[in-house]
Image (cartoon, rainbow, N blue to C red; front, side):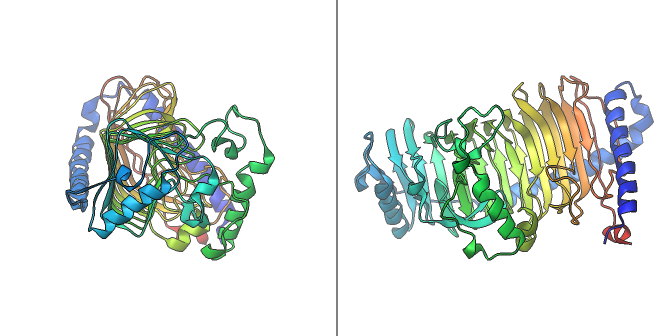
Length: 478
């Protein structure tokens, strides 16, 4: 067991360390560079070596490749008519495409209403310009249940709007629109209380009626096959490739999602490129790779009601059961316009995170709460290591950087989260002098070995580099 006295003592030391980091970042803009030149050279050399790894990750991602043949959904009975259900026609086109060895399933211009779309190997769902795939809001269209993950916990739940299970070489591409039709009257009220709650609260449809028992079952180790609910108020994510390989999501616009927008789970070789994520509902996270390996997110726009990008690896006991980190991820050249956080790790991070790189992103809006955010706690646990972030333009945000190891439940568990080699450097254009909040202490894991050079959050290029070094859990257990 962890010694409570030592835990409290180190937490106190850690808070002091966090406070010093805050003061130094706010107050050292006039520091002479010559005093830190040697340290700067070492940091820069190490930084460049690490960013070569980012380029290597991109090169290692196995790309998709589709035969040059098209399967037009209208050839299988689809109609752009109001009230016409195209679910069966789209399924028929996907099946035919897969059976023929692959190609594009093409959605032409027009508005096509549909229920759940399940992709198959070697199928590229392609939306032409002015095409709209409009999804129903009646939950019955997302039955029967499928294996899914909801806030980091596996269950048998509603099918995501676009879903693939253990498929390989799949795509969602084109200039069209994926419309989820989430609104203050459809899907979103299942959240229950949220911000100013722009809907009439109805306790009978509150997600807590399903979320609470699901989390209890997961903590108790109930088999996933038993985690299903006749009364289910967990909104499905929009796009969820589950245990898939070689996934491409490119150029489409995703609007008004019931829940998270792009949520690859336990998948490999994922590319999300040029996507517009526009959804301002509750939990409208833009792109949340969970327990994925080799992921590239680039040239995307995020205008969302929650985190723009959040990297995750499972919640609490269920994350430890699967024990699969999110790893080898590169985020670059994205615009974060609105949301809770720009680039986020956590909070469902129990499987860990490693080798994460983010660069050349712009984050500026009065509607964007935080630029860079790491959130976890001692109930989640998990090792967060080798995180490198640089060349980020942060303008008008509430907080530029937040590191919080006391998120949500706080320090209430025995799974000591740890951070190792977390380096955030070259932050441009921050308009707030009080833009850093570092609460990076958890269960005795204080923020140690902090380095700060050229660390002013100003409108000029700056370098602010912290390293959070993992402390031995054994020393805390004595």
